[in-house]
Amino acid sequence: MGSSPPPVLQGQDLSFSVGQRVIFDGINIETYKNELVSIIGPSGVGKSTLLRVLGMFVRPTRGRVLLHGEEVTRPTPRIALVHQSIATFPWMTALDNVKLALQGRGLSKEEMEERARRALEMVGLSGFERFYPKEMSGGMRQRAAIARALAGDPYVLLMDEPFVHLDELTAERLRREIYDILFSEGSTLESVVLVSHNLNEVVELSDRVYAMRGSPARIVGELTIELERPRNQYNPIFSEYVSELYSMLSIGE
Image 1 (cartoon, rainbow, N blue to C red):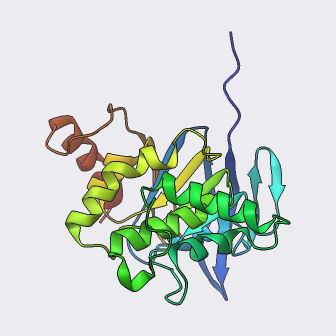
Image 2: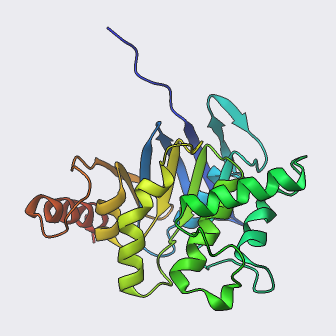
């Protein structure tokens, strides 16, 4: 009998407070290789804060984060974050925006250039290296932001509502491609953690989902999505998963 694979990322007994107010408490979460995990919950429940705690961009009041079994005590290039705001610097080309992630890594200019070009190619932006953000659509700018996160060869990517500021057609197109982009051949990425309010998006993209609610917030449910990709939101089973997630968030209301 084989042993189960070890987690890539673990949050153990995580709690976070602001002053006397406990935002979330006793959170346990883990991801495994080639897995996209989503965190859902009502607004203000602390999902985005939890995401930042998992990257140690914000320190928890209690608990710890482990990457490949080793405790993470500060931000590391091995855990990258993509914000909901499409964070590209307007005075830099797409290539220079991506190269920012490689500063201070001891790489030569040639190595930085090669890695940045490879990351842009992964997200479908080959040929747009010299474009400035004002010359790119919102979807292209978000791809450039994802390329910047991937350029540093992270093991884990944290994504905070990455499609929320895109028009629906652009968001739908990027959602269709994002799973294959993130877990493409040659990528070091092992796990993705996504925060989203959009339950259709969550079912379309996720392998597993954690639901948070309450005050202080706790994990109130976990759901594995067993649907072949690409996923069709008009599939009745897809709708059943959406309904189940909705139920997890509405129990007791």
